[in-house]
Amino acid sequence: MDAIDIIVTKRDGGELSAAQIDWVIDVYARGGPNGSAVADEQMAALSMAILWRGMTRAEVSRWTEAMLRSGERLDFSDLPAPTTDKHSTGGVGDKITLPLTPAVAACGAAVPQLSGRGLGHTGGTLDKLESIPGWRAELTPAEMRRCLTEAGGVVCAAGAGLAPADRRLYALRDVTGTVESLPLIASSIMSKKLAEGTGSLVLDVKVGSGAFMKDAASARELARTMVDIGTDNGVRTVALLTAMDTPLGHEVGNALEVAESVRVLRGGGPDDVVELTVALAREMLAAAGLNGAKDPADALKDGSAMDVWRRMIRAQGGDPDAPLPVARERMEIPAPATGRLTRLDAYAAGVAARRLGAGRARKEDPVAPGAGVSLHAKPGDEVHAGRPLFTLHADDPARLERAVEVLADAYEIDGPQERLPLVIDRVTA
Ligand code: URA
Image 1 (tube, helix red, strand yellow):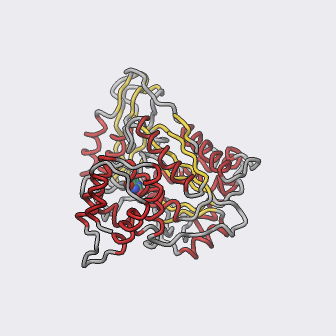
Image 2: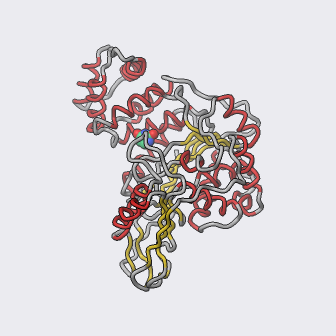
Image 3: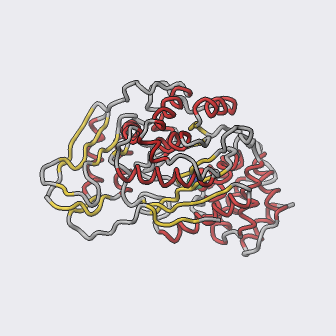
């Protein structure tokens, strides 16, 4: 095998063979600091050729399998409950994992959920949960199993042993302008999801200004590719395309979103967060084969999801009763006019939250757990001149003005109504 032949095949629009894919991923993943038979510059050239030429279904499935094989694969098939998981492609105010995991566990499934940290304008589930005093994201596979057995659900970081080829390739794509390749995004996400050993998977593919995919057509293509990969690898996989043109819920920021999720677990909370949690939970239970299970809407109302939440937080060292961190500074932004709020842009709200300290500009940056934006109105709501539209939360007062700037153009009162439905489409095998 020869890396140059492989690059040239893809550059000229050819299909890579299974043996070529297995070889290039295996050799690249094992490459150490002294290089390997596939150098970074060769993998970068191949990634760019894939970005331009795309991949067939057979190629993308094999590429994912090869990345999966580069590391360990967890196995929870001996647990008494069927396993199911959800993956979101990322958005603003997307705290759905927090109420969803305990709601699904309360209805009889086991939920092993490997999650990530926020980057750019999007939030990360691990950053949100780390605002709970004592809670730990890094678990060994044995600790994951203990949490699943004790609580029914676990949310933790992916260990270094899972899909190490993706770790290396993702870092390379990040600096070579090749993140945006649809087959590379799909195989990157799915190699990690398949490695965590779930029996079924529901994908929440976000569409809109606050999402990776800005339009429904490209989101549908990403969803189709990931559903095909899951299906080809024996995991029952379904995708929902959901709106990310405006933030989910009323809170954007780590501790603010935990508090809002707890309100949902108490049977309250914003309608969009409850509706999406229940829609995804029903899909997860159906994918796990639990069609006659308790309805997750009831689990949120009757306190059983809250009981699982408390067990989950304790199993990972957290105190579910401890007060959450609060930012040192607050600032209210009033509505400039009376009327109906017709637009509230997800991307701008995410950037504002990051500028306030809730997110990161670089992977290694810390986050301020109490920072973020509270949204006092959502599109469709009446607003009144002089009454608060946003509350900004930050530890450092110097951050407030930069968030005010980005929010100034983020909304419209009495403009055209152009909202996406919360659930736009459903993609199945
Ligand atoms: N998330 C991932 O894990 N990989 C990608 O390529 C993009 C988003």
